[in-house]
Every structure is written in structure tokens, then in C-alpha cells.
Amino acid sequence: MFPHHREREQPIFSARAHVFQIDPTTKRNWIPASKHAVTVSFFYDATRNVYRIISVGGTKAIINCTVTPSMTFTKTSQKFGQWADSRANTVYGLGFATEQQLHQFAEKFKEVKDAARLAREKSQDKELANTALTIAAPQFSQSPPVMCVNGPEDKLFRSQSADITLSSEKERIKKMLSEGSICEMNLEAELFTLQDSNSKLVAALHEANANVEQWKKQLTAYQEETERLRDQVADLEAHGPSDLLKDELTQSLEELEALLKAKDEEIHILQSKKGEYHEMEHQRDEAIHRLREMEMRNSDLERRIQNTEQNLSNSLEDRDRLDTEIQRAIEILDIKIFDLNDLRQSLVKLIDK
Image (cartoon, rainbow, N blue to C red; front, side, top):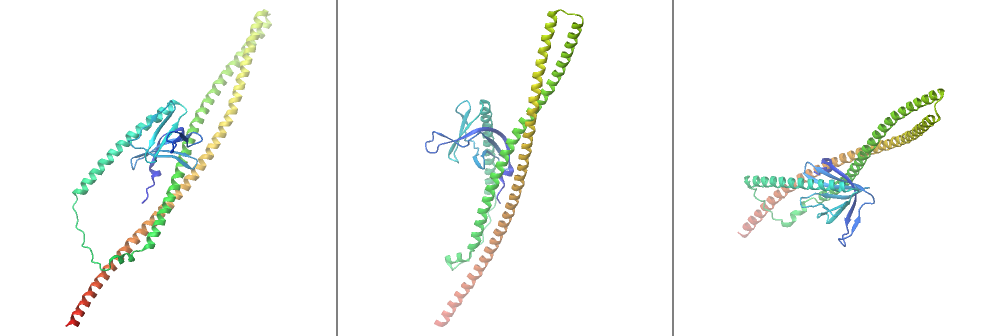
């Protein structure tokens, strides 16, 4: 009865930016909606052909905007852009770290807006076709209404307790859906952050490994060169070389030893950074474990919602069946009352005679 929108939505683009909202009082000043840069994502619902912009800060949805063909994203500076959401009666502003990020977001916004326009046109064409089919379909005559002599007192036969129970069930389901939606948005935002951190970590690790291998090769070459120069120095000393040549060789040897020492220090720094990368990988694994636990909790919540929907559907069926029985009892009562009125009129006629 209640569709699970978050199950059907898929992320298509993400960027990090500082989020602002226009001051509702002055309509001029910007109010920061987040203390730090947050992830702003485009989502696509393939079932309903709907695009949304979502951003979550902590446990609160900062942006939850459905993209419509009438929206326009405007660049107001090199790193800032804005658009108006008439449904939320506000204007959103995004501040990016670079001009390239702003350009990418603006291009994606235009692409999504065009896609939303095409989806709306297809939906309107489908509605027109359905309307034409409905008009062309044959109209079936309705059964004649049952005569009722009791007037407004028929409403006393309705079950007010069933309405109260259904209303409470609907409110509980709406609350559970809202909690599940916020939980899933937090999961997806954390997943985007983890994927971004993971890609940066892998790239840095590959670069560090490549640099270590390259410097190891250079270090081996320098060591070989140093040994060769030492051999030359020893050979020259054995043959009594000139002081000038000895000084040049000694200077070259000192330079190579200094360079070798610098390379050793760089390798030591890279090895210490590699330990930091391992620690980051451990943190990522812990975050993935928490993410899986939250997904399990979300699955349990969805299962409870499905059970509640089934119970609500059964309650509606029971209510419809009760309404049918009450209507049948009303019809029988109306017939009995009509017969009693006929009997009373017949008795009155007999008494008059």
C-alpha cells in the first residue's frame, strides 16, 4: 500500500559542497544549513521517473528536493550556485571548493532537469491515453438505490472503532517509513563518503608503492655507483693519482652519499605513511561493518512495515465485509418496516370499516 521509495532510487551523481538556504524573513541573506561541506547527491526513481536532490547532515535531511522542469540552477559566482524550490518555498545555495565542481554540478542539474521534462511529457501522454480509453469504455448501469425510511439514523450502524484503529495504524506506518527513509539516506551518504575515501586511499597507496619501488631502484643504482667510485678511488690511490683528481672523486663520493642518505629518509617517511594507510583501512572496515549492521536494522524495519501493511489490509477487508453485512441488515430492516407500515395501514382500514 505504501511504496518503498528509497528501495527504488539509485544515486547517479554526488558532489561535496557547503549548503545554504535563503533567509525566509529578508529573502536576501544566506543561512548556513551545514557547518562543514556535505555530500549532495542526485537520485533517480526508475519506477516513478522522478529525480531528487538529497543531502543529509547528521540525522537530518538538509536538502530533499524533487527536480522539476521549471527549476533553473544559476551560477552567481565562480564557486557558488543556487536554485529555487517552490514546493519547499525556499532557495538553496551551494558553495563548492573549485570552479570545476560547480560546472559539473550545473551540467548534471541541466541534464536531470531535461530528463524530468521528458518524463513529465511521457506521463502526460500516458494519462491522455488512459483518459481516452476510460471515455470510450461502456458505462454499466448502477443498481437502484434501496429505499430507507430511517433517514440520518443509518449512520449509527457504522463502526467508529474500526476508523480509529485504521487511523492509528496509518500514523504508525508513516512514522516507521519516515524513520526508515532517514536511516537509508544516512547509510547512502556514509557509503558515498566511504567510497570516496577508499578511492583516494587506493590511489595514494598505489602512488606510494610505485614511488618506493622507483626509489629502491635508484638507491640500488646509487649504491652501485658509490661502490664503483670507491673502487676507482682505491685504484687511483694505489697508483698514486694526483691530488686534484683525488679531490674530485672524493667530492663526487660525498655528494652521492648525501643523496643516498636523503633517499633513505624519504623511504623511511613513506614506510611511516604506509602504516597510516593501514590504520585508515582498518577504520574503513569498521565503518563498513557498522553500515552492514544498519542495513540489517533497515531490513528488519521494512519487514515490520510489510507485516503492518498486511494487517492493515486485513483490517480494511474486515471493515468492508462488516459494511456489507450492515448494509444487508439495513435493507432487511427497511423491508420489514415497509411491511409493518403496510400492515398498519391495512389494520387502520379494517378498523375504519
